Length: 210
Image (cartoon, rainbow, N blue to C red; front, side, top):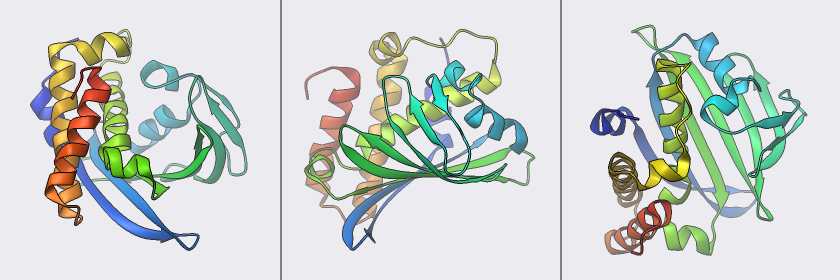
């Protein structure tokens, strides 16, 4: 699979923030990027169980408010808000932890669709070790897969392991991790700590030692 690494990295806007959730310190990452399709098509691509495996993971359950879902080999949770075609929110339950994901879709002036994803989790040692890139890089990889799928819907889905060790894959992961490092510093995280966390994140996603 060939694609312009720099174009896709520039397409993403990344931010990190601290907030309070249920009376406890929480951390949030927000990824924003535009997709070259109409809002109704993007909504269908992220909620249709037949299309999700083409760019993300197989899913089962009821994608409606109050319904539950299970991503194959990954997270499960409850749909807390479902307002087609603009707003989807759900819990993200994985490894005994619960966090929260919110997706907002809106039309932009070009006719494309703006996708804003926010993932919020309670503060933890995992955040201290990896920073916002821990989930930020993962969601950015998913957004890349979504963008490539929308551009070529009949193309085979790239193999995740092969991609992450390819030159383009490593370049994308490193660039994304660097972007999340910058977001961490902008949010007030110590630059040295942000650098160490970003290096750990890059090593995790590429399978290389930091």
